[in-house]
Image (cartoon, rainbow, N blue to C red; front, side, top):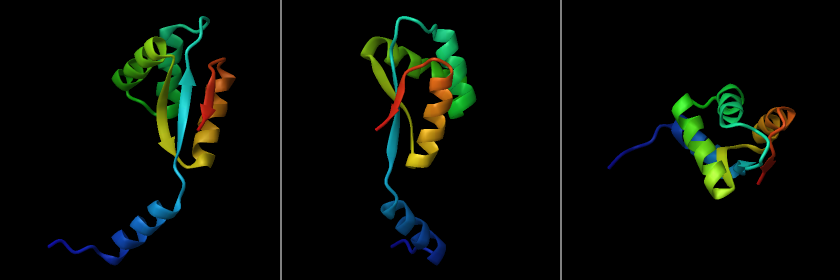
Length: 91
């Protein structure tokens, strides 16, 4: 039987109480793979391989949830993505 420390219990309580949102990026006919990949690396903190995989999903599926987190964090990333001409929403 595993026991959790008080700090772990506090962290779990915070995680349960906080709403989690997705940052969803949409496909378009304007932006290149390179631009989307570079943007995901710089704004979302992806490693290049992860950004490439997301770009492929965006292209073939029409959209991809590229990050998950608090609304404020996702809204800031959405603004950065949109500033680069890429369509994104927080869902």
